[in-house]
Amino acid sequence: MLGLFLYFYFMTIKSLHALFLKCTKISTDTRKIMKDDLFFALKGDQFNANLFAENALTKGAKYAVIDDPKYKTSNKMILVKDVLKTLQDLSRFHRTYLNIPIIALTGSNGKTTTKELINAVLSQKYKTTATKGNLNNHIGVPLTLLSMDKDTEIGIVEMGANHLGEIGFLCTIAMPNFGYITNFGKAHLEGFGSIEGVIKGKTELYNYVMKHGKLLFINKADELQVKHALGGMSYTFGHKEADVLISDTNSQPFVSVSFNNAIISSRLIGSYNYNNIAAAICMASYFKVAHSKIKKAIENYSPSNNRSQIIQKETNQIILDAYNANPTSMSAALLNLDKLDRENKIAILGDMFELGKEAKAEHQNIVNYALSLKISRIILVGENFSATTSNSEKTSTFKTFNDCITKMKPINNATVLIKGSRGMALERILEHL
Image 1 (cartoon, rainbow, N blue to C red):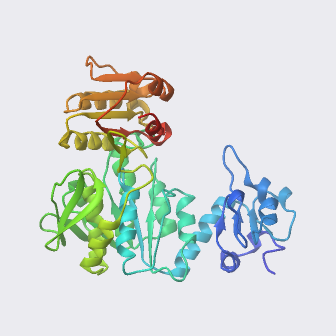
Image 2 (image 1 turned 60 degrees about the vertical axis):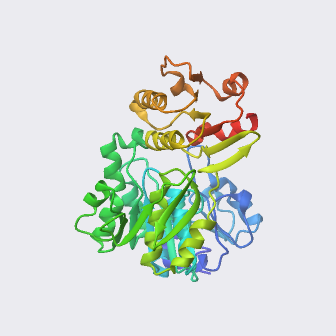
Image 3 (image 1 turned 90 degrees about the horizontal axis):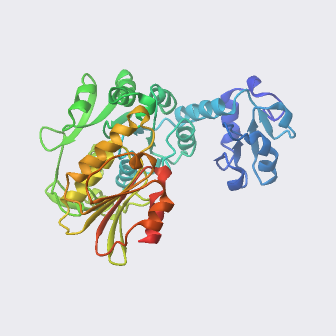
């Protein structure tokens, strides 16, 4: 069979795609191999999956794509020049082959929650396939596209980036028909260099969509979004002068919105989730999902994976938002805590990563901001927060997580915000409250 005996550069992507269609799915991890998978032996700084290609076939993979000839021990191994590039090229071909509407979204905060809400509302009417978790990079986006099949009617692709040019490149793979940016915030400053760099990097999505004459979904209240969407076709949401009118009812602790003369009560906390909900409603309206089904989808959606979760732990109510953090999302979470009508409010904050030269100043800014709010105690965890200064008795600082759990004073009868970057894994503190 063509491709089983020849090097990939004598084979077209079309031929590889024909083999892919005979497989169950794509796999990049031999620990999760299933029968008839197509295994891609990716390489990284700390690993080389070419070493495990034979094992993948033994476990049931139909074919294995490798890029090192010394590991080609079977005719079921397809030798290519670069496994990662081949994965990306195959996903690009598959996207064209399916020829379905693709919604792409990026932004500094709220990408994954917004993606899940969009999927929840659109799946009320369509067969959707969306990014799983936050597999949103140069590997995750191709895997998302390759998880779509002939039954998929709308694809929803989350795109993440930590440097300029990355979103633009991902757009050449996903070729989105629709684009949405959640917001521009102080995230990945180490890679982008500045907030101006963040804006330039994220708007690569809008530039691609506009260049190809496709549609943008725009938050009419976000002046930066409106500015960068000028000249493009758009479908907007907001409080006034928008295609879809949605307003925040300011309920606590969960966000409720008013849409089509009805109140939609979500299970999401924090006013910052208003835009995430509104964007999903806007897209559902564009794709003509019935209003009753939009309401049902939003109200039934429950956050998970350490994002905006409310957990009751003994006498404490926990706001667990420890999936990730940057100065913008940290400030929003603190403001939400401040607005809650509660007596004993405690913030447990972990270091924010990838801030580069701005790390010292941004961590100090967060401490200063937290001290200005109606928060009873502020518990700071991590090397960056340990380097900050505070003259308030409200603050306790711990350089490591272990220091925190062994020395932290007991917490009882409190509303507790837990917020930090993923690397801090602050959700572990739940066991000690």
